[in-house]
Image (cartoon, rainbow, N blue to C red; front, top):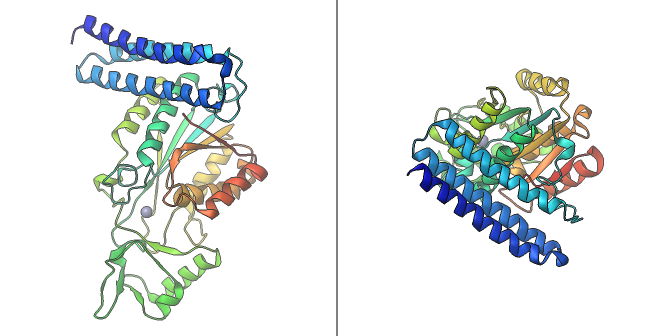
Length: 367
Ligand SMILES: [Zn+2]
């Protein structure tokens, strides 16, 4: 593809988007919620188009700086369109939060905390695929791509689920039936009583140790789950998806080569670790305690939270953050950058309400 052809292609994208926007503008007098949704769709369409254009540019093996320059140009155009809408005095809260209402986050010291954005969870065909995760990842990447320009993300910390196949949350760690065989019907839940009664039998950990662990979980109102094997140490399913890697790279380059940080969780066999910081029975190992303290001491202005699964690992991480006053008033939940296994999980809904009402957290769209 020649440079001229690229320009033509680029101009066509811009024209199409402007057409979309023009239609909306003609009806600006009736700027109701519906119209704003349409606007969002137009922006989304725009971003999808620019993304595929950038990917195409990269395939043509143009020098990196040229690709970046083209992206900057497209990005600038996006901001112009956005600014235009901003001046239309559309007073609609909620829908706008995220891209439109970024002023208070700009130039602050903000952390983006991404929970378990790993192939096994977020890519269809992943071993523990969470419905809606690809969409959430797309939104998360857009959040990074757009807001890195506004200096809204100072640090990025990604957690990584990391198990051996002998982990207590994996089928291989359990026997059932008569004659005994490895659990083959999952996901399932296992209670302390079922282990006491011999319905299920741990293969690698002492029965008494497992029973007291399960009792501790149940005392918290939770229950132990056995999942399909996922995020195995060293396996491809443990990796971050390509689109996210690209967004992380761009963010890094924008920030003088800053590195994103990762935090492994779940590699100990005898305890489930949904939260980034604590085991399912509530105990907190020294190394994650120091990570938590370190985050608090860095005194971030805001902590954006995204990832999967909203009702397990995101929820448990947020529960730990909410138990620490040092994070009060700082949490921003990027609702459209998350996906849940059970979208109607009541414990999660209760936590969200509590975070907003009592902990000064905000819920907003990342995209
Ligand atoms: Zn796991």
